[in-house]
Length: 158
Image 1 (tube, rainbow, N blue to C red):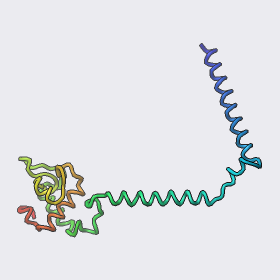
Image 2 (cartoon, rainbow, N blue to C red):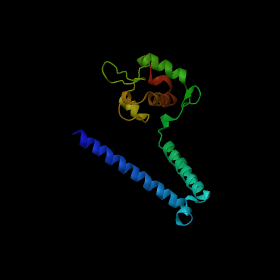
Image 3 (cartoon, rainbow, N blue to C red):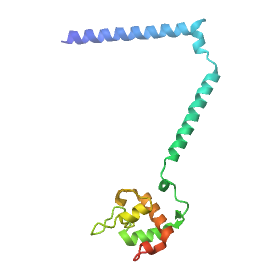
Image 4 (cartoon, one colour):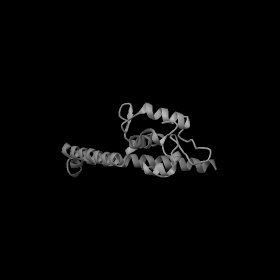
């Protein structure tokens, strides 16, 4: 058993060294005058063009990624979200749900940080269940609702 393993290791070492020798021989051939030297002496313009093309594709890819971001993913400007003071939204959220984005009312009809019903959530552009939406989206949708109708959407906490 050990003899077979040693034979295998010996064959692997010989094969590896033969491969390295072949690689060195090929690189020697490339550095000699003639066909191979053209591969190593490519003008830097080719490399510069390749890099410029790559950078251009990355910029385009970045722009396309930014265009696909939902409106609520836009950063809040200063202390406002969609033109509504963050402090106003925080006080509503604290009163409605204790600020918990996963809060659900006892009867299940009001959901999320701002206790949206599903109809109101859809009316401000939300889809699905507000509880499943990221907190930033809940903040954005609440700001839209507040900008449309003021605090009347939250008769107790508004």
